[in-house]
Each structure stands twice: as structure tokens, then as C-alpha cells.
View 1 (tube, protein in one colour):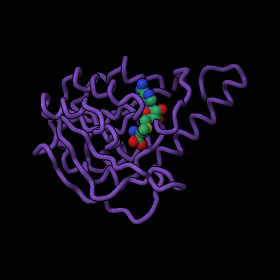
View 2 (cartoon, helix red, strand yellow; view 1 turned 90 degrees about the horizontal axis):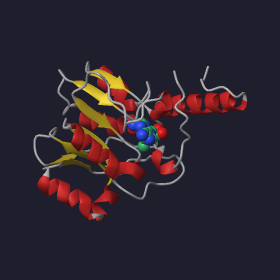
View 3 (spheres, helix red, strand yellow; view 1 turned 180 degrees about the vertical axis):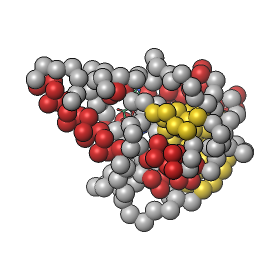
Length: 196
Ligand SMILES: C[S@@+](CC[C@H](N)C(=O)[O-])C[C@H]1O[C@@H](n2cnc3c(N)ncnc32)[C@H](O)[C@@H]1O
């Protein structure tokens, strides 16, 4: 595994999706397609839930040397993930340029800007809305709602789903990230470029 020389930047970009927020999207993913999770490690709840549903998955992450803006896997049919929110617009633009269906979990705060409205109008982007907020951290109640912003995936432009949560649940990807980041800082201290 190659360290890409990337350092984690914003906390808002390092919020890992809990399993209960992944579950409602799985039934909309065609079982015969290959899903690419481009912001995800092995134990991302997207990767785990898609595999459990018998769907083929490839995953990549900037810390394993696969920058979403320069890399794409050899074989894939649609993207499913929660991308870094600070670069959402660039991510959506690249997804549209790649021309394949996508499902991106994004904050509803994005709807305050005019860009998504244009995309819903011109590109017929779709939305899956939840009845509750996703809780990303244990400490503070999340003050924004999140939705799946999709293209060519949902049966209609707006779909509603319930979130089946009662308390904070941590994504198993959080442990992967602790391992990568912990190992990377140890390696960096020893002047190495590859984590053990
Ligand atoms: C909001 S987190 C979500 C992680 C995971 N998709 C999930 O839902 O649990 C986004 C992740 O993308 C990573 N990332 C940031 N820029 C990236 C890039 N250019 N290419 C691939 N991954 C990137 C961040 O380090 C972060 O771990």
C-alpha cells in the first residue's frame, strides 16, 4: 500500500458514514453492476454493505494513493460514496464528466447554493431524503441534514426513506483511518514513505 503524501485536512471531510445511513440506498443499486467507492477503505460501511448484498465493489482512497481526480478503476459501472464535503462541487462535476450513474451522500446545506438547483433542472439529478439527521460524531448533535444526491439511479427524482437509528454508531472505516494515519505518522518520523 502506497502512502500518497496526503495529510487529512478538514474535520468535515473526515466524517464516516454509519451503517444505518448506508442501508436505505442498497436496494436501489442494481445487483449486476460493479460499484466504485472512491473515498473508501476496506471497512467503509458502503463497501461492507454492498459486498454483503452480493454486489461487486471496488474501493479506493487518497491515502492508498488513489486520488479521485486522477484515478479511476479499470472496471466499474456506478459510484456510491460519501465524498469530502469541502470539494463537493468538484466531485459532482467529475462524476458527471465520467458519465456513469452516481450516488453521493452530501449535506443539505449545499441546497443553499444555486449550483444544485441547476443540476436538478438541467441534468435531472435526483435526491433521496431522510426523515432524520445522520449523526456523524458522538459528541455533538449534527445541525444539518444529509441526503443522497444521485444521477440515473433512483426510480424518480425525489425519494423518501426512513433512517433506522436510535443512537450514535461509529463506522468501521474510522478504525482503518486511525491505522493509516497512526502508521503514517510513525513512518514519517522515521523518514519512510510507505506504511508498514
Ligand atoms: C467524508 S469522508 C467519507 C468516507 C467514506 N466514504 C464514508 O462514507 O465513510 C471522505 C474521505 O475521502 C478522502 N479523500 C479526500 N480527498 C480525496 C481524493 N481526492 N480522492 C480520494 N479520497 C479523498 C478523505 O480523506 C476522507 O477519508
